Length: 112
Image 1 (cartoon, helix red, strand yellow):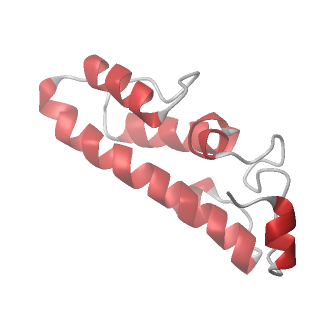
Image 2 (tube, one colour; image 1 turned 180 degrees about the vertical axis):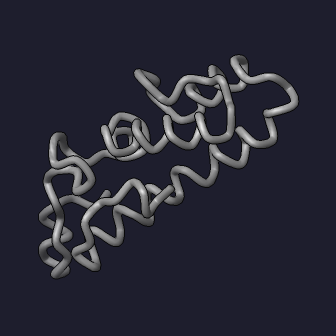
């Protein structure tokens, strides 16, 4: 388990707050589902793909959201939902890493 002190000893900076919203501590659940940046990203992409599922909200895990979203999505759009479920977290993670390692500002338009 990587703690802030272990990261500091290795010369790595640990940001106590999410760099995408600067509102809450960064956890994987927050970063991918609860962060306002992530929520807006999910909303835009699901809307663009005409997928009627609601973006992640209060689910504990991505699997919980996936099961709910799959039930809300017509069979003809489920392959698109599967792709989006893999790609959106990856793109959010890449955006976060750009903020951490390149001092970039989080930009939803660039991500989308």
